[in-house]
Length: 115
Length: 113
Image 1 (tube, rainbow over the protein chains, first blue to last red):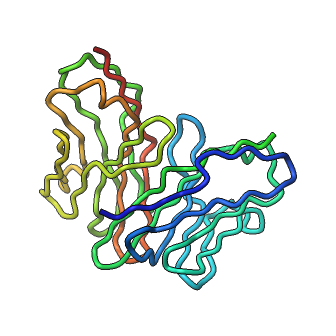
Image 2 (cartoon, rainbow over the protein chains, first blue to last red):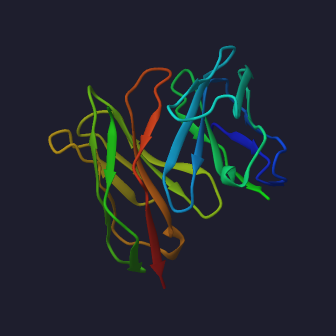
């Protein structure tokens, strides 16, 4: 079945630094990638939707200059949290959707802790 | 806009008990409906789905029927196991290549031996 690999699974960074999270579709072409943020014991909040080769569409309230999303190929999308602060600490999850009936496949998530 | 409402949790059951997790939705058109499961520290896994009215999705003993007349997609399992302990999310998609998933708040299920 469709597999999405997300790395790293955990990362700790210092306040003010940037962190990049990768999401790869291993056995299908991901025409659309979705990035979510999940707070403890809460649901997933969609941050942005990206299509290969075009700019991401951000949800209302999400700072596009802080959360940089790149979807340069059909198998790779990245989320970069720039100038991270402790309030950016969260669980980030990507989801990829391909064509030809491939549904939504989720990565295993990244636990970001900013200290 | 689209929305998904799940019953409040958490839910704690004894092993082999019957499980029902309620989910209702609001959407225009004919959405697809999903149940996802999240184990601690992991991403989401698709549990089952239904794409049209009266469809029944099933997997690993779990079932849910797409009821358009009541706009519901309740999750059921006849006999839960300790390994079913997880967070369960109901979700819908409006369709289309770029259509996003709309999630309910999720409910934590704990099954005790």
